[in-house]
Image (cartoon, rainbow, N blue to C red; front, side, top):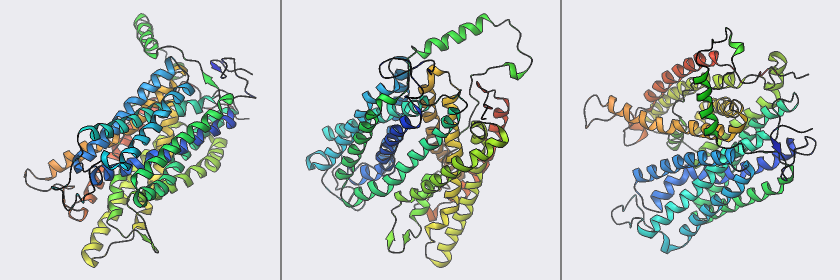
Length: 501
């Protein structure tokens, strides 16, 4: 049985018995795990590498990482545009995936050869005597980083869409698998991050940055090779030309039909606009800073601050399995939705738990500071388990729900662009968070330029992070109400109550 718009690698109409489905998605899951094993841990440790090894300033290191993440999002839009317009999603991955392999290779080469980086020096103790990164070596660093950004961005935009293409969302049976795909796609991200935070961080801390970057490069290559092995089984979406043309056609049609009367009921409207989704600043960076001031020993094992993110990632994987295997079948019997609940309802659950998480974080921060002042000893890092658990619920609901929404509610010829927009929107909290921190510090100085804002203490113990968490709780509650307002007005392009008999 053929599916409209999808072809095999030879350009022939696909056969559902031979192409797509769980068999094809397995190759995609593998690449997701490999890419995130390489990318996620390096995002968390890159500031340390730039500051300690390349001797860039703290502010400069943070700016470089922020720009790196922003450029990755920009390249995601480029890859999405090309894969929706002119080449298949699989071809886009084959073209741009090797750039990420090459980028990590360049970073490994620079970290290995002494002539390509500044001489070793304790920049924290001898900052004025340490040689700074400059000249060709600086160019090589940026070339490696932005080559990774090009590959990661273009692949990121197309990978989820390629996976979703393997299931027919209009088919009563495959629609269940289509919704489940996004759960397991996110599980692959979490599994890759979990493994990378343990393996890659350990290698970089104990064996050297050059070995760590080289292993990341090989992981990317291995993932791409496995993806290639599955090419006979993929369903490929035919490129449909520039989406900008179709968007322009919508405006022209709207102008021509401007005098027509509107339908009287919402059921007559097929709306393609997405609801206004407000993202609040993420708290994970502050969670890591909190953990760095606490007792991180588990018996004789000491957990590095970067590896603390293993805790919420572990919760996320456990909750994802429970959600997909138990909650969805149970909810499906009640609601009739193939995915158990709608994507906007799932996002709403995430918004509901976010202020709860920050309230818990505020209480724990108050207790942590009180414990330091009274006893002089740090609390166990496992006091953070509850807020990490709630953050895991937020990721399982908000992250996956928004990914499914952006992929499912755009037109068939703009799936990759929808996914790219998801990654860009989900990256906004880091920028919003930085802006909010500056505003909060300015306001809480009480007009004194030499005063200290809530988050300007020399250490976390001298800051007032608990008050900032209370502020985030208020913002999160407002965001939840805002989501409810727009979600109730939204009309889905397709009826989510597909027959599941």
